[in-house]
Length: 547
Image 1 (tube, rainbow, N blue to C red):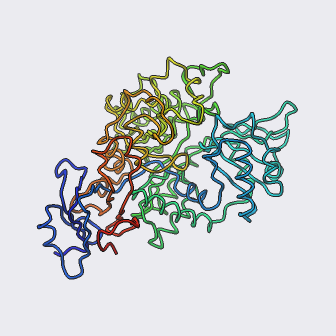
Image 2: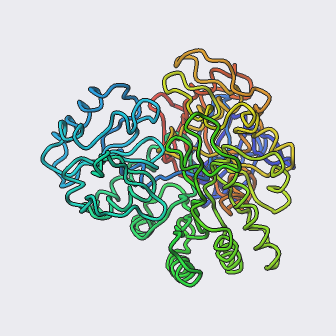
Image 3: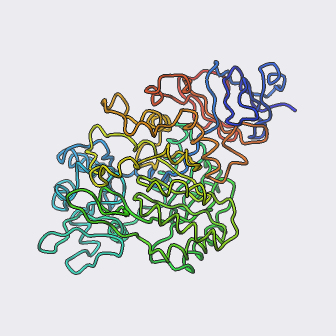
C-alpha cells in the first residue's frame, strides 16, 4: 500500500509508550499508515507520494487546547480593539478612538483591559464617551467577567436608577444611584444582549481568523467551553463547508435560571444537530463562580484583604446536584468554571451526587482553572473521575499588573494557589489549556511557564511563583497532546502518532525537551498537518512538498 505523504529524517515523539519514537512516518487518507526507520517508510512511496524532509527536527502530535474560546477570540481579532497591552487611561482612549475611526459598525467593542491597572476607580461611561461619543461602546476586561459601557450603550440598554441587578451580576453605581458604566458578571450580558448583535458574517470571519491563529501555533483540536446558539451556527457553517482546520468539541452553556428540563432540552437539541466528526456538542458548561479580580470568586473563608467579604456560588448546591445528575445521566460531559475553593468544592460535591445516582462512566468531567483548591479536595478530583483542566500561564508573578488576588486569598491559602503539582501527585488526571482570548493560545509560552513558574525573561525578571508546583516538559507536552485528546473525547483517534490514528502533527524549529526552559516560549511551528493536510507552513520551512 503506497502512502499519500511520507515524513523522513524526523525526531518523532508519538506520546504513546508502546512505540515512543520513530524517524519516519507515512500518511494515507488522512491517517498514519506506518512509523519506523527511513528505509522502511521510504519504501511506501509511490509516483504521487509527497515527501517532507524534517531535517532531524522534533515532531509531535498536533496540540489540542481543551479550554479555548476560539470563535469569540477570533471575532475580537477581526472586529474589536485589543487592550491587553494598554497601561494608561490615555492609551486606552487612544486605542478605542482609533478603532472607532476604523470600524463602521453600530457597536464599538474592545477587550483586554487589565484589572489592577483599570477598574471602578478609573473606568466610567463618561471616560469612554471621550473616545466614542456617537455610538454604543463596550469594553471587556482581560477575564471577560467585567466590562465598561459608555453612555450611549447604557441608554440603549435601558440602564437607569430603576434597573435591578441581575441575580448573578452587579451594575456599579455612584452615590446618587446612577450607573457608572462598570458592569460585573451577568450585568455584562444584560447590557450586551440589548446592544446591536454581531453579524454572523463577522463571526464566520472571526472563526476563520481564530483557527488560522491556532493552526499557526500547532493546534489541531479544541474544546470551546461556552457554546450558545451563535457559536453553534458558526462552527456548523464551517463544518458544512469542510472548512474547519481543527476539531471542535462544544460545551453548551447552562445558566443559573435554567431548570433541569430547559437545560436538557437545549443540550439535547444541540447534540442532535451537531454530532459530526469535526464539530460536535458533547458537554455542558457551568460557571459556579466568577473571578477574584472583581471579587466574585467564591471562597470557603472570606477574602483576606482589607475589604474582606465573600461571593456566593452562582448556582445553589441543590441546584448543582440536580443539574449535574440529570446531565450526567444524559451522557454529557460536565465542564465547570471554578476559581475559588468553595466553587471547586461545590463542583466536586455535584459530581459526587451524580456519581452516586448514575452508573459511573468515563465522562472525564472538566474542572477548569482551579485557581484555589482546598488541599482536602485534591484527591477528590481523581476519585470522582474528573480532570484538572489547568492554565499554567497564570501561575506566575506578573511584571506589569499588580497581583492583587494574592492579598485577597492571603498568606495562609497562598500555598494552594495553582497547586498543579499537588493535584497531579494526588492522582488527578490533567490537561493544559489557554482560555484564549483571556491569554495567549501559544502552547509554547504556556509550557514554558508550566516548567518555570516565571514570566518570560523578555517581560522582566520575577522570582518563581511557588516553584514546587512546577511541571516537567514531558508532563506539559502530554497535557497538550494525549491528555488533552482524552479531555476532548478524542483519545481513540488523536493525541498520539500511531498507525490508524489521524495524521495531525506539528514540526518544530527546536527540541523543547532539550533546549533551555526559558527558550521554550520562543518555539516556532514550521509545519502543522491536520488529517495529513498542511494547514500551516512557516515561510522559512523548505522541507519538501506538503500540498
